[in-house]
Image (cartoon, rainbow, N blue to C red; front, side, top):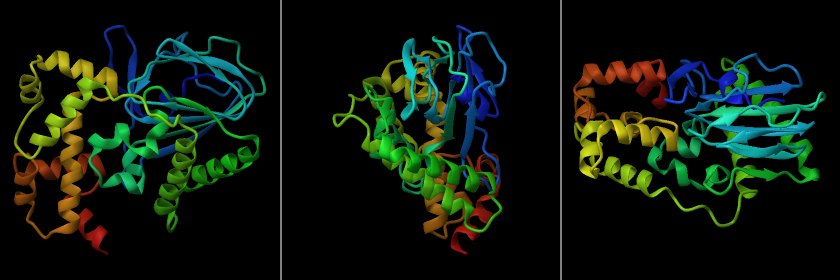
Length: 305
């Protein structure tokens, strides 16, 4: 089994780091929950660079059903053993196996963005790195072992999630996939260390600044200047530590507030735009449609129906 899980579930390269590491994105599809499931059998991985080194801007849960081997995350080797679940956080550099993979291996990979989880869809995305449901992704965590008695249940959850996520047009598939992903995250969070790792102080300062100013027409340069950084340096730093550049975090926060205002109020789009730091209604429509595959008006109607 290789560690090439992020690349195979992403849709394209968002950027390439200075050292040549590609950073893959999760490309949303209209009408589909941003969660993808893949089962990896030995020898089924796609070809790529010799070490398969890559990072991604989304979260990945990797569950080893059987077999063995190892891979590296941020230069540290991790064992691939039956019953072990790995949480791969956005921005982490993943490399190919350091030990020969098993010939009878099987693993499951779940790639998602946190807004696929109903409980996380409407909270500030700036709280995601420290949310209890994502505890296994926190610093100092990253891996845990599922008890032998629970492994059949994990496989069943993964099979059901793959089925629901792969058939989005079926009645209730969206809700079922969200519930199953939540179940997996609850189970993984219960396996995480009881004491979470300390938050990254730079990321925390950046997120506090975004939270305080996102309703205004601020840019990434404005946030960087307020914290005493150059825009290029801070963008690179935030991308490395969170998997996303600075501007995307500002946009993510604004889009969460846009969704809330569309769902909870009857405010015209021009007012929604002005309250979320966006230029005007036309710009809001373009950004919203590009991200969610529907106009704000259509999305508002669907939520109320």
